[in-house]
Image (tube, rainbow, N blue to C red; front, side):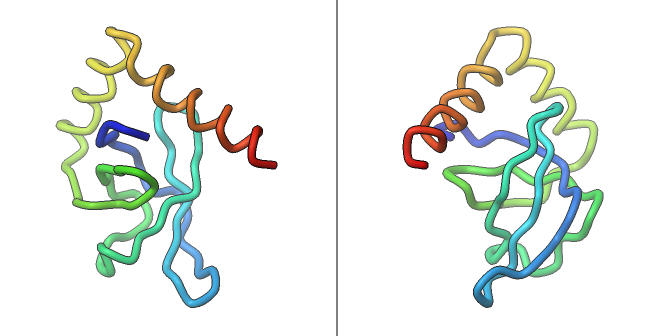
Length: 90
């Protein structure tokens, strides 16, 4: 992801000693590193940049931003590009 995209934390887990989470971006769920936000919890919204949750965000701001990104086509463009890169690497 090149943009900082808001998403909602759906699950928190640990991988190789690193705090990780499943984050939902308007129906697309990605694995995200939560190491920078040790106090974030399931249900919270965060801004994700290049696979790292970088800040907590209130729900209203997150939903408004997601709607804006969706309306101008950036959400699908950014998230689908990541999915294509992941498939190519596999």
